[in-house]
Image (tube, rainbow, N blue to C red; front, side, top):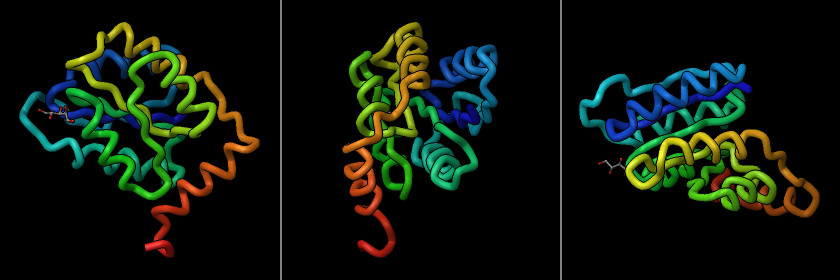
Length: 149
Ligand code: RB5
């Protein structure tokens, strides 16, 4: 899969670890930064990653910050991005099966790296159920379409 990965200053080490793990399993990963622990603003990193997915330049985005919440809120402002914070197996699985989530967010201050790795693998491997969920995801996409504003 083509994956874009981004973080904020809270998650530099974890971003590096996930980059290595994703590449080791054959994914094509672009690291959108940041590249050191200088304090930054997470929306500046969420937006380019979410835009890459929305534009079809990447299949998925993975966003890291202290809680995952700021990245998730930011990514969901981009039309076509469906971001979810994955805090356990059920949220990782169901965000794919029912919501066709294309952006995964994690909080490195509240989640262990091993758990993040496991949840990310589950999320990447889980397909969208489609069927009745397609109509609902279509309605999500319509909410922030330019014509609905
Ligand atoms: C940065 O201190 C922190 O606010 C950020 O990493 C994240 O937790 C926001 O949601």
